[in-house]
Image 1 (spheres, rainbow, N blue to C red):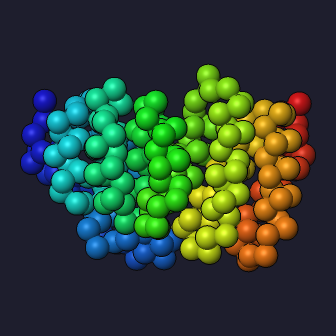
Image 2: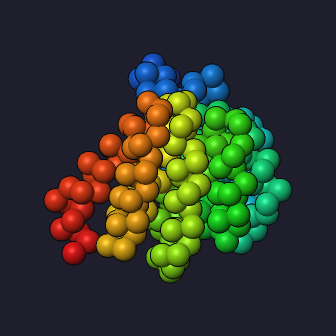
Image 3: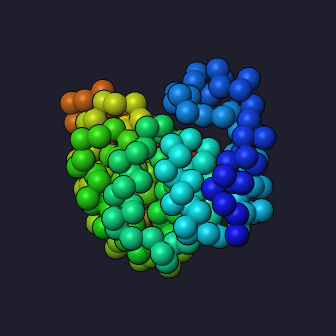
Length: 225
C-alpha cells in the first residue's frame, strides 16, 4: 500500500510543465496542475492499485492530476453520497469533472440520483457533472433499460438554455450519447432535439442542431441498424 507522499513523488516525477500552456488553451484550470497526460496517470493508477483511503488523501491535495488518479484508484462500492458531494464541490476544470464521472461516479448506483440532484445546481461544474454522468451512463451501463434514459430527456431539455460553454457542451454530449445507444433511444433523442431546437436560445439551438447532425449521420445509422 502506497502512502500519499510516495504517490505524490511518483506523480511529480512525471510533471511536464511545458504542457500547461496548451492545457490552458483548452480551458483546463492550470493553477494546481503538473501537466501530466492521461495515459501516464492511468499507468500510475495501475501501479498504485485500488485503494480507497489513498484516493481520499490524494483528493485532499488539490492537485488536478492527483484528483484524477484518485478517481482511477478509488473503489466504487465504497463510494458514498457524502463523498460524491464533497468531491463535486471541488470540481474546477471540465477534464477533472469528466474523468471523475467516467472513472468512478458512473460505476455506482448512486449516479442516477446524483444526475437529478446536480442537474439544477447553479455551480457550473456541478451542473456539468450531471450531464457528463448521463453521457457516461449511456456509454458504460450496458444493463440499464431504455426507460431510464427516456426519463432523463426532459432533464436535458430543461438545461438546454444554459449558455455557459462547459454546461451546454455536456448537455449536448448527454443527448448524443443517449441517441447513440440503440434505435429506440435514437428516435427519442432526435424527438427531444427537435423540441429543443424550437426554444428561443442560442445554446438550445446549438445543442439541438449539433446532436441532430450526429444522430442522423450515416455512421450512427449504420452502427445502430
